[in-house]
Image (cartoon, rainbow, N blue to C red; front, side, top):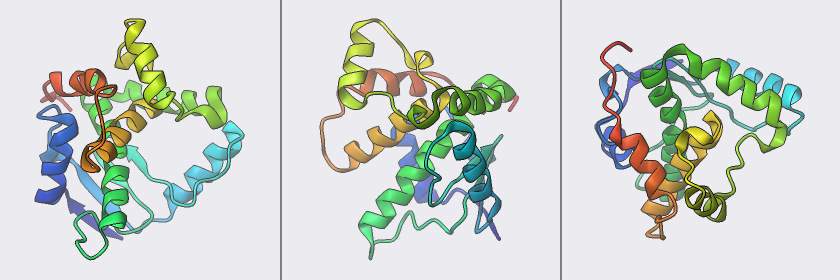
Length: 182
């Protein structure tokens, strides 16, 4: 097990998505722990979905990963981008905790039970465009979909792709200031 804070690189990259809306100094990453994969298998069974190969769990300001993240590995830019995008998804749950308290956790669990294999599906770019046209906001997506919106925004931003469909929702992440209570 390896316990650490966010690296300076990770904090800089996370700010591309969340701005100053997370108290980054409170985030703790615990790597090389196996129980998140067990939680993923149980969650998959409950939601009738395929079990993930690697599953992370966010509890409060702590992020548990089954492997060591390589977010700044210049010799493996694809793996580094994948790990950083995974971290962005999990930091979404930290953002949820810091802004909404413990309510985020049962909401995440309920989304898995209710939506099954569709838990993470927000409709990608067409879904975001339709949601925005209907006047929907970030809160209209479940907690896991919010994480995927953040993850995909980060991927596309780093790949130089169009992020215009994601921007209104990312702006909602960025517009909140981090809570000093959490």
